[in-house]
Image (cartoon, rainbow, N blue to C red; front, side, top):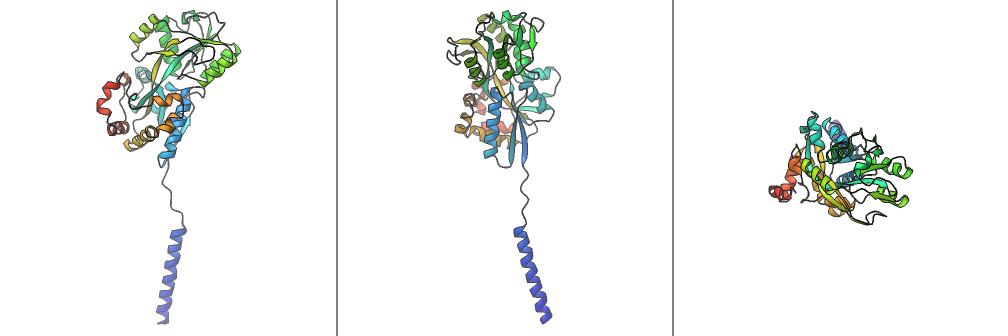
Length: 331
């Protein structure tokens, strides 16, 4: 009997010990899913939007951590997604068609949404003799960094189509937005382009430091551009947007895309877009152009993109009742 009571006592103590160990042993936390979000130069809109979207997602989507990465913007972001080195990114409309024409497998990429616009700022110092983009001949021009839509679309395609200019006509400098403003401030370039949503803090700072002008796009040139590139949209930058700009500036913009890898799960992409779009106050506080990420703007120009929407985005748009009526929002 004593032996039996001893065994029973030991078993009881062992059970208590095991139970205590189970309570005290830390449980393995669910694995986090890490995603990279390609943005652009810290002087441009992409950087602020991508960082802001990442913050919202990190706050409201459990088990996901998104890191916003500063890149050379559109083309580099799309290439990184295609190569599987990044999961999310922002890119200018026209970028994926360019890469497809170069033989890249853009089917590895899907649309999440279309949102803000990148607004064309061709900038010179106020005293510059350059009055039109056709005056770029023989000058030093900041054309955007390698791997950017600014370089590949605006500075190469649009300059040739609109004004008949190639890089043989002037000295191109492959520099970022922040380097463009520095070059104009230091007078080391004659003109430069920043293609990003107005108002831009970097241009506001430049205009406070040195008097500047924004070069207008002639109506006949705009017609040429629109005849060749359907995603070119006329735009007026209002007088007073930047210090010293006292008249409306007639230029143009291109819609911008939020893109992702095709192989991301439907549920994940659904959770990502839902988090951003349904925390509207936080989204709109990121940057004035974050307000353009709306259900109505989400499809603008998308028929001209050589890839479709991700199933997770489609699920969200169907839930909100806009997917079946999206054609009315294409323009």
